[in-house]
Amino acid sequence: QVQLVESGGGLVQPGGSLRLSCAASGSIASIRAMGWYRQAPGKERELVAVITGGGSTNYADFVQGRFTISRDNAKNTVELQMNSLKPEDTAVYYCKMTIATVVWYHYWGQGTQVTVSS
Image (cartoon, rainbow, N blue to C red):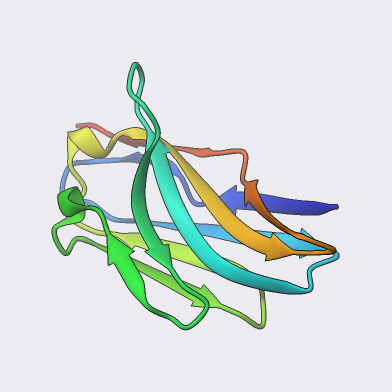
């Protein structure tokens, strides 16, 4: 079994920063893409950022240079550094990894709440 555990969410004032972390554990043979998604109340889940196994990154347009995704292949972790946070960034943030055990499969974390408010 594979588990993804997220941490680092919380309440922050507009303009502040948060760092999210997601760690995968279990019988992992290999990990391809790692990514962060978010879902605000009443909205669909959307991509925030993704990083490939080779380290290439892609960000949603709304990130506008404020967030940075990184990964540590030795630790099976992915992080999202979020700066200059805005109230509209408020959402539940989920990590997703494409992981091979016996077969390739997409795994999701349980989500961590990020609230940006004064």
